[in-house]
Image (cartoon, rainbow, N blue to C red; front, side, top):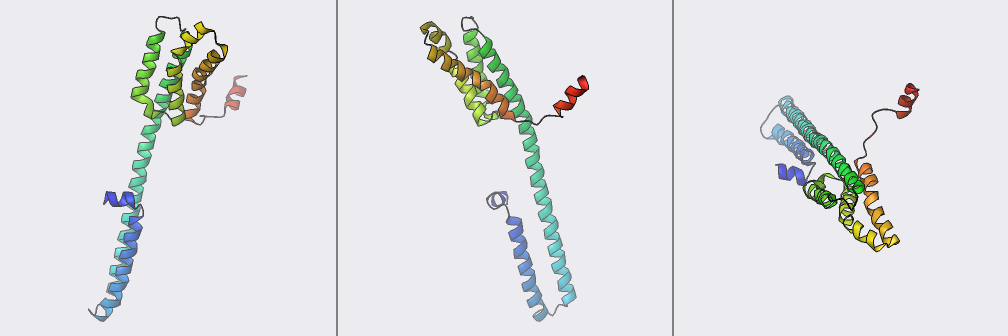
Length: 184
């Protein structure tokens, strides 16, 4: 039944309509063939429709509840991944290329990206990848003294921070202007 619900999200409504149609057919035939009283048949149809409504609404509510639980869990993990990516980006950008640990920072970024990139939004994923892939070129470019290439390399690495921050898009907890005014 789940595969049917995934392919046809309104399957409950379709089944309900079929049951109501069947109920009306039974009403017509039941009155003529089986000589059932119209009150009894109407009670049966009412019970079927009521059960259908209750079952459909319960299925819809439980589906929405599961989706909301998954979204909340994903939001927490995505927030953590963006924070970790931002911290690694800062480490990458502020570690001098002459530092003996510079290569290890790049490897740390690559390792983190391999294990966590799916939790980043697509733009942050690409920007972080571009940044740590461009970083090893920094010492070579500095020795070459090609100012255009150095600037382009720095911009590739630098823009990742802003993109990672924008990637999470969380609303503020409160109005910052009220906080600033209360501090004065």
